[in-house]
Image (tube, rainbow over all chains, first blue to last red; front, side, top):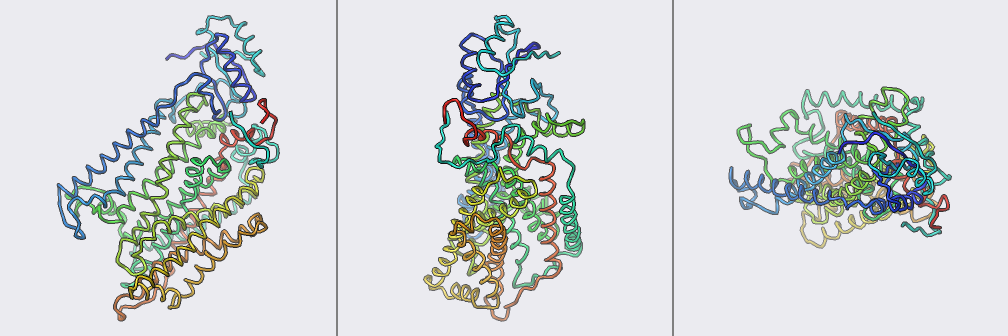
Length: 175
Length: 458
């Protein structure tokens, strides 16, 4: 999705005011592009109408991959490629394989999930973030509204934001 | 919405606002290093250097420089290894297990404890690596490489190999967990930075974080799933470390109680080390409003619980040795308590079983000086525990003609000192350049702790 250039920002001080404001702004027909917060606000994804994150499913799939990979590796090495009897155990001693299988499952699930998170959230060390307001990472919640994607006039949107309890309403332009 | 009962004591005191949190924590990163910090750093670098000499000699001349002999083939190296790994359990326990239990008091202490975990695991890894003698060949010995690389495939029946997988997974998952938590805070420092260099460095470290609701939503899922994965992981690590001993046939090691007993001991020593470090950090950085007496008290309660589990484990071990009717086993335990290493055994008993029981008194567990002293005593005791398990079980071999004592050389001491240097250097660097408290998480509880009246009237 290409990013817009012309924004109106509603700045909020309090997360409870913000939550009510999101509902009010959405009901008035204004499309919110995104809400930025200094900390995770619980329940904000519900009022914004976001779906539950699917990253837990990704973690499960990566984990299963790890399980299969570990078992394939160990059975291949100790059972097929170079079978040896060690400590009177079978060629494929499954109980001995459990610890490594568990560790590989956790390793792949964690790294796979976090890697996916970085990719879908566009997080990378060389990333150039678009900062709407420098106080977002400090103490302000900011509601970003893309003027070009809304039918309402700028004045109307500002009015909606002000009546929703925003402490400031600002304009922000990007090149 | 979140509802909080009125009787709950606030987790952050002093009527802090969100901006105060940024000022108090990020401000520490921005200010110039203090003289105290530089002195502390100088001491740890001196330890690192002095210990580095012992490490260099060990690598150059081999592990014959240590005090090991053919009877006691494992001593300080593995004692220190298990000790450091144990310390490295508190961080992930605090951030993962307490997250799953929704214990919000973890939020002011999880960052520093996770950092401690990571540094402790690095220190622990030094010992098996050095004990390889020729660590540069370690790749062939520890990694699953094809037979054409020299020796055979690694042996997946060996608990030592499980350890390789367990420790490296634990280290990397803890590192990721810690880093995920740091990203939003690095963004705070990036946005506050006034000079170009720190803006560029913290900008890269923050991965271009913006704090959008969609990202936070994924972020919360990632934290929760990582906590769910890290919880069995943290329990598995010391379980597998205990398998190094428990799967052997040495009297004194061959016991099924080891996994839970080691895990409890690890949490016990880990919390003690967290307290030692945090009490100093709290004082130096004036974090009394974030790490309150309540936090200290709660950690001390965990120390009583795990310390009592450890105490019961010691007694159970002794009972089972008698009850099993196995003479070798019985001898191993009687020898621990009354043999030539009786002083180590009784130091362990005093430090680990008696000293934490003092925390039953509220006066003691809410007293900072007492907590600091006991936290150090606990870690001394936990070092002796590993020493007792390892050396006393080995030194009286099956044949009396092979009986021996273990005497550490200066190189044993030096390598241990080296890991202290490494640990404190890393921790002081962390305390200076990284936010020591998770700002984003603490900000999320500022209101919930009843500082300000809220609209819903909580």
